[in-house]
Length: 119
Image 1 (cartoon, helix red, strand yellow):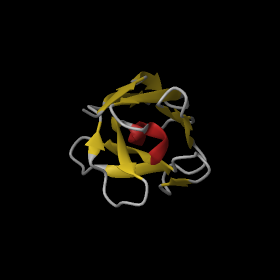
Image 2 (cartoon, rainbow, N blue to C red):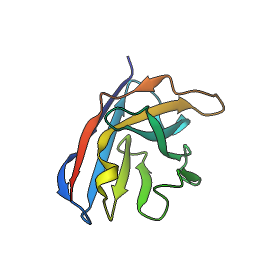
Image 3 (tube, helix red, strand yellow):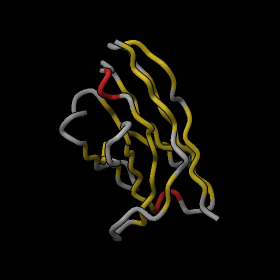
Image 4 (tube, rainbow, N blue to C red):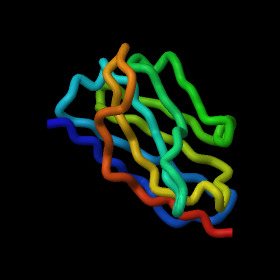
């Protein structure tokens, strides 16, 4: 079965950086778009970033563009989210998700990793 396992979250001061990782198993990783989403307390889950199966195409939410970078290593079945210049409003649970290339929706999700930014 498909499993996505996130890691790398934690407590960090505003202005700091984190790198989140998500390792996938049970799927042919190189055939999947990978995405990062986040859910802040009391808010709905929102899109953060997406990367194509080859890594050649990326998309970002406007609120994170220029501060977050999504990347992947298909040899390691892992997708990363480098988060720089963290702000308190980035506090959320961060989830990775997988979507087979050419399809819509995100059927596979990880359990999430908490990122907390102190001011």
